[in-house]
Amino acid sequence: MASRYPTNTLTSSQARDNSALVETEKVKPGHAVISTFDLFSIGVGPSSSHTVGPMRAGKIFIADLQELQMLEKVRAFTLPQIRSNEPFWKVKTVKIVLYGSLAATGKGHHTPQAVLLGLEGSDPETIDTGTISSRYEAILANRTLHLGGTRRVTFDMDRDMLWRWDQVLKTHPNGMRFSCFGEEGELLATNEYYSVGGGFVRLTHTTVDENLFYKGVDKSAVHGARLHQTHNAAEGDHTPAQPAANDPGHPPYPFESGNSLLALTRKHNLTIAQIVHDNERYFGLSEADINDKLMRIWAVMDDCIRSGVSTAEKTLPGRLGLHRRAPMLYKRLMRGFYPGIATPDLQLIGSASTAPVGAIDAPESDTQSSSSGHGVDGRGEVSASGKMPRAPWVTGSFDHAILPMPPRKTMIPAVDFLSCYAIAVNEVNASGGRIVTSPTNGAAGVIPAVLKYVIEFISDDPEKSIKTFLLTAAAVGMLFKRGSTISAAEGGCQAEVGVACSMASAGFAACMGASPETVLQAAEIGIEHNLGLTCDPIDGLVQVPCIERNSLGAVKAVTAAQLSMASTGVYRVTLDEAIEAMRLTAADMSVKYKETSLSGLATTVKIPLTVPAC
Ligand code: SF4
Image (tube, protein in one colour):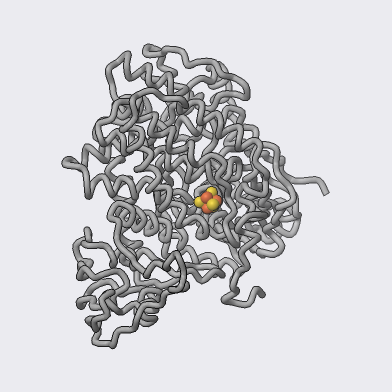
């Protein structure tokens, strides 16, 4: 039977988009500038590409259906409908197909939850993260999806969501197709979406790139400057950005590479942060808007650290049954930073708990270590708990030329604080909490950790440090996004933790008053020693190696900045060369190491099943 309605291939509201495409095609792709607030956006864990992007894609699809009035009732068409004199709903069912990496690791990355709640009209920035699990369970149990919050359709997970991990769409490994069907099973509308990393979504047939729509779901509300965006260079196009101070189609300080960014700083006597700040004005933001948005981003980051170290939950979701470590790490630090969370007494590492009333409970692992012989202060005295000490167990022979080392733990403040902050954020991310993609969710701990460290230990003007850090880091993120990728499905973990490390290193150096050359060199060192870093998350969860990797990324970022600031100013490798090396490495990397969980740790580690797989 012929369809009663024309099939719509939704290319984001064709008419408006086509005119936008015509506009953008006039402009030669040439610069790296995007808004800081697209690079750092507030979302939900555990993954920017597998959770935030798919949720946004679902909402974009629904917004387009609403615009086409496809979620409304229409007049009766068939004889029985005419007889009943009842209007009927156009859309009867929806189908979702996940491709490539989204299908391979989507389950552990909460992709189904994200897509379905996006189709129900939720947005990553505003969704109540505490309701995600229950809403998802309700959809599965009731077999009902509430499209856009207005139209209920039946939804059978087994029948209506297909997992094509064996197929990769041409545009990007993270592909998805949404389709909706009418009464007679006829296709009413369909479109493909690509979650290209960092929460950015690209639509099929959108030839310019995903930044045409940035992260704005409501395209009519997207600032006009974004519709002229030419962020990504076309394949093989290395045309330098044109100086365009008077060109309304360009930001005031367009840069396409680290070198051109440096040239701008010299020519205009501006810092990197100042250049990025002034470019934000081009996106329609006032001075107050920029300030508010930067402070809001930091507030969410800081809140994430706070909730990570103060949570009462002991384990992370998923079959690994991983213990949350941030509360324990926080407790072990010398002092706390959050009012309302009691400061634990300083104890030697591993000593028995003497936590005052109101202090954060030690996680199970801490308690376990106390009860397994670490309740001694190292001198054989009775611990504060009153328990008799037990001699620490030493592995190794005492009848040997190389005597074994006695067990010893100590705090190295920089490392311990950075680790605690980063792990706190990534544990919140792994549990599906509120997160700032920076530049992705899997790598969301690095930048907050280093910035928190700056604020707590170095800065004498926190607000200035926050602005300088985030704007400088954003510039570096833009260079990676244009010159290489920030998607693990395209480049492995070098594109996530590697890029975050580079961005944080630049931010740290900038807060230390380093010159723009030194800042970009810090960014170069930050990525150089992450080149080739693979993505092989166990069980498709953003937990192992992800959580610890963020802590190491934060430590490495500070070290990279320190090395850069201690150098003589003669640099062998530029940031542009390192970004190009990353691009080439990504291109050569096996798909097994690109967020597919098909090799590496994902296959060598045997998962201790805590629940039956069925
Ligand atoms: S290994 Fe790295 S890239 Fe892969 S999921 Fe974990 S943090 Fe993301």
